[in-house]
Image: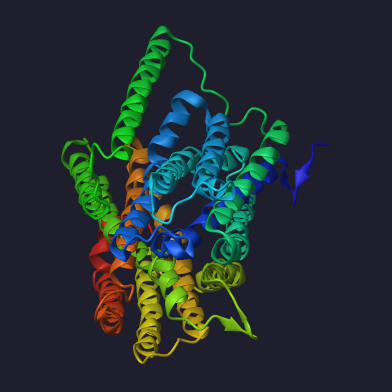
Length: 510
């Protein structure tokens, strides 16, 4: 009898722990990232200004999601999913350890009272490597889970994905509890190294249990001369692109090509919007679609806009709210100061607690024909996000008064943000898959990931603006949070008002 994992294929355990450790490394480092950049040199940080730090943070999290597109494409055509996950994990670990290099140099007495290239080059190179590695690992490990259930499309498959996603939440929950105290109270680079170490644990278990993935995610078979020529050509172009990127990065690190993070972030945001809608326009007018399919493509464009708006608020957890926890929150609990990054564990904790509640609620409503449609759930997600930021308006007013805000403000904010995520996140990708025309299916998945990456980029930029740093900046913070409240709630209400025309565009999709 073959081994199983909680009644599922044993390979699910391999992928569960791989993803759990990868998410540990990602969220563990994310909890430190913007704090490390904004801290003074005396505090072990890079002493970047808030706006630059926010832009760099936004570019990083954008890169993580946007590179999932070529990562999945290359795995399908060149590496195979299994090798892509392995190579991706190795690159992620190298990235984290690269970020830890300045800490090792300090231990051997090589350091400076100023930020030098010995600090910044390993930092930026590490971020780039993590983006590339995550782009290879993240989409392909999820695809391999689906391959475990190729002959099972029912409840067992859904349960398997639920178990898999619980690994994501477990990694996100535990990671800040480990890396934040290490980074904030001992040495920032130790926190980065800890994130890399957990990725190594994930790689070890992946390799030692790889036998349970036999026949899944293998290198794509190349049979015809045309396929051989196509793969050879792909490898050639891939080498050219990699060499070109290495040359550009070398010139940037040497200062030959000056790069302004804020300008680059703003340009990247405009580029994502331009490319997304240019492609949607191409599909709409030149894609040879039927009338109903064209309507669904328009609906995907609407999903793109509201999805980006949601993630631009929600993902401020790692930027704006992380800075607020560090600078303006009373972190003394029972006489002991806790690390600011520990607040990053609240959202995954609430996900673990409330995900079953929301799932049961949707089932209960569905049995009574009362379950909201996808656009309504989207609207609820935006409104709940706005409620969370309304709480931050009051927390910011406490900070303006000169006092530290109680941790309960952030706790409540994260609770409502989690409710919003549980309303919108499971619906978004699923809705995109249902609306996508068959011949543009994969590309439409790319549109969804582009909306998430755009939202993350904006979240980073907002984190640099709503930081309370600079003359008069703290006094503006309540109004800045209120602007987000108005924007998100108004967007949710607008979506409700547009319910009928959007439902008409969606056709038979609910």
